[in-house]
Image 1 (tube, rainbow, N blue to C red):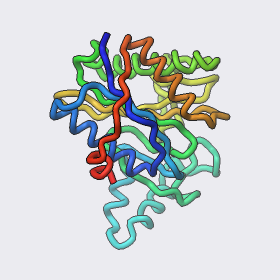
Image 2 (image 1 turned 90 degrees about the vertical axis):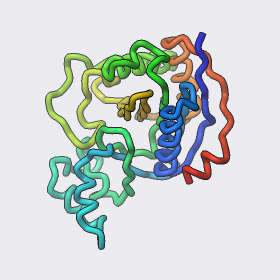
Image 3 (image 1 turned 180 degrees about the vertical axis):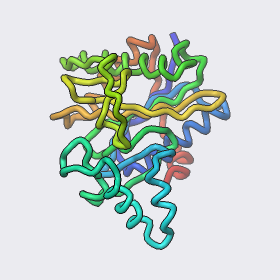
Length: 243
């Protein structure tokens, strides 16, 4: 049975968490890290968004007041909506700070979600060779974990909406998990020649014990991928780099 590393649960601002994941991804590229899973939460409200999100064009176009450009971009975009609606422009209406990920995907509001990252080489599972197959199998592990908590998630599948939005949780895609008609799990990846980073956000209503949720999802990974997890200590050098 394969062994994957499991890093300690961390609560910290999203820029630190994104930097930590990027460091692990670089280690995979240098072949100095086996597959590793870690769970974390944002210690305060933040938005993370994919590296190719058009919002960064507006951000970079105004070096004197980039935030003004971001607010202007949101106000003119299709995501403008009422506060609390699926398409709410989080930055415009709430003033939440925004951070760029190295993975793709749209804007995700953090602070009331559990996030996990999987950093792995392609040789750890046949499904990892394909982007779609990797999403499906990772979400099978998440689904298994949620079922262990009495939830009833399912794949959105053929009901996938043709519309797209820069807000990640607005429209599910076929490999996303939903409970009822609400998307509860959405992920994004960064790939290289040697392996990939998968980042996932879990938004489950009425969930406050994120460590218990993390333990359940970890068990889902153990079942679906047939792996054992070995606890990995936090390297002070990595923490310093991320900071």
